[in-house]
Picture 1 (cartoon, rainbow, N blue to C red):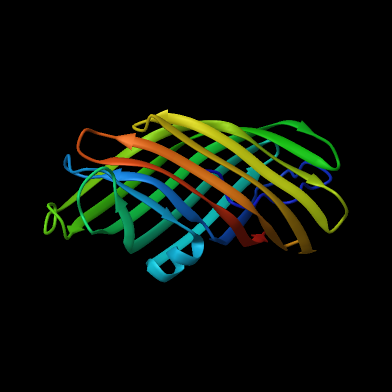
Picture 2 (cartoon, rainbow, N blue to C red):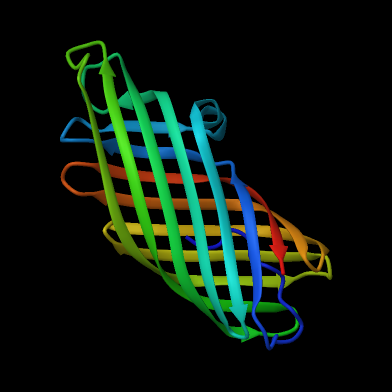
Length: 237
């Protein structure tokens, strides 16, 4: 996972460290399959409106420290969702209750390979830590009353690119693409956005982001895609 909001490039390489922090809101929906302890997998297909009703708690933020061509990147997010709209896959049950907690944190490094006065392109590499706990409860039908809970922790290595390009002094384009694997079979994250500089130290970004992970350890299955608009504020100092 990349820091959610890339800053506008400066006109010349600074000879000191610069920092940015970006709290953000990701208005994502979720689709995919999940399962625990060998129970039949259930399918989740929720829009952001559905998740807004089901979410119990969540937060997200990203940061960057940069010195010349080098940068250190971080991104952290947590969400706890309780839903009754999951559907069983090929089993007899009237309904399925799903509770899922997910925490991710990424730490990476970047290096600028292309830069001019209007834009910059970085190559990046890092590691992403995942923790998830899933509870599934079947209601009605032959599986009524059956439930299970499982959790997992794993780390994926990720590589990719991120870039920023100034359209005017106020507006800029930003985006990234990352892919990796490790504990998961595949782990990917892409975003494209438009930023606006209010002043040198503060800007805002709106865009669209999609993230996918396919993880299974024989007990827990987590094959999901999250996607939707992203909105945030970047503070630079």
